[in-house]
Every structure is written in structure tokens, then in C-alpha cells.
Image 1 (cartoon, rainbow, N blue to C red):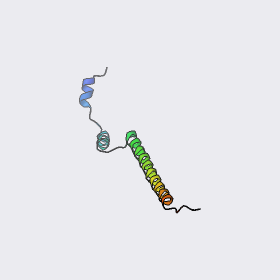
Image 2: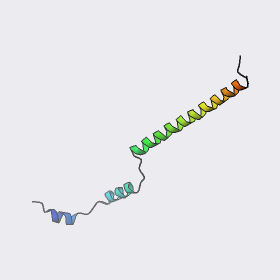
Image 3: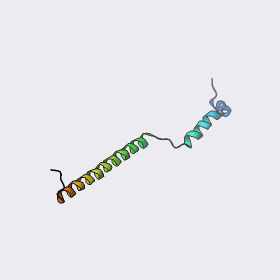
Image 4: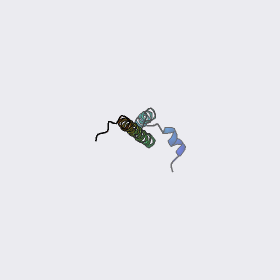
Length: 72
């Protein structure tokens, strides 16, 4: 039968495992939340850019109407 207490006394963690653990804990990893937030930021930026461009076009049209410079 296995004596778990003695086996635990003999246990020494692998250096590879400790190295991986340190690398994972010290690395800023991207997760799904980060990806989702980046996608939402890109979508919001694109919407804001479209709105700004739309406002500029509307202003140009208003200027044309006000100054009677619309093409005939």
C-alpha cells in the first residue's frame, strides 16, 4: 500500500513546472474580455468617425443651400 505521507516528503517540484508557473504569472496575457473590449472600442471609434463625417457632409450641404451654390 502507498504511504502518502512518505511520498509527499520525497516530492520535489519539477524545475520546468516552476519556470512555466513564473512565466505565466509574470506575463500579461490577453483573454476573451480583452479581445471583446478591443472590438467594442474599434466599433465605437468607427461609429464616431462616421458621425463626424456625416456632420461634415451635412454642414457642407447646408453651406451650399445657404449660399445658393447647389449645382443646377
